[in-house]
Amino acid sequence: MKKSLLFALSLSAMLVACGGNEKQEPAVEAEAQEASAVECVASGDVVFVDLDYMMATSALYAKEGKSLEEKMAAFQTKMTTSQESWAKKEQGLAAEYSKLESDAAKLQEDYQKGLITTLNAQQKQQELQDKGAKIQSRVNNLQATMQSEAQTLQTEEQALAEEQMVLMNKFQDLTRRAIAEINADGRYKMILNAVSVVDADPSLNISDLVLKKVDELYAADSADAE
Image (tube, rainbow, N blue to C red; front, side, top):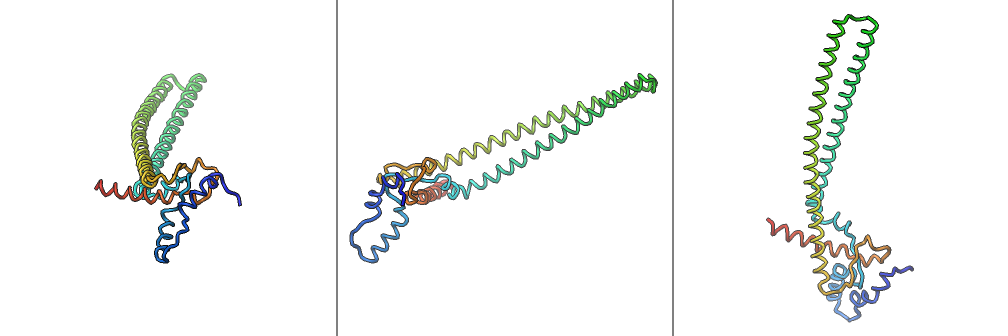
């Protein structure tokens, strides 16, 4: 059976910390085994934690992370809807302006051919200019609206990004404190992030152990804040 380097390095330490050959009473032994299942996930020199897993299953994420994700999804929908609306209005104004140019060209052609009097040509030209001015006014209004809405969206996006940063900082702080408490006795010489681990024995994964402490600390912090 293939053993990883991490497993080989920590095997002897695990046998000392998690094993033990001392004879115990049945009740005491059963209690010790139950405790070891929780407290002694692994106690080698080198262990690792899966931060992504911990964050996704933490009480912090359940209470604050999901809510933030919903807000971010709603914002994304709002931004997409706004952009599509702007694009549709721009396309409509562009089509109107294109039609206006086509009408102006047709008017010029008819006048050169003598198919319309000068007076009528002048009247129609004035009408086209008035339409052009109205289109330009609507273009200006649309641009002003787009700029205002874009600024509002940018402010909302920045606020959500800040909320996300605060959430991650909370998780990092809770994780740091949890690991400090769990490893206060120095049982682990090194605790790695799972993203840095290429191969390791599953028993070296102390994510659930750390996550339990993270949730305890979060509950305590939440109670103090109330």
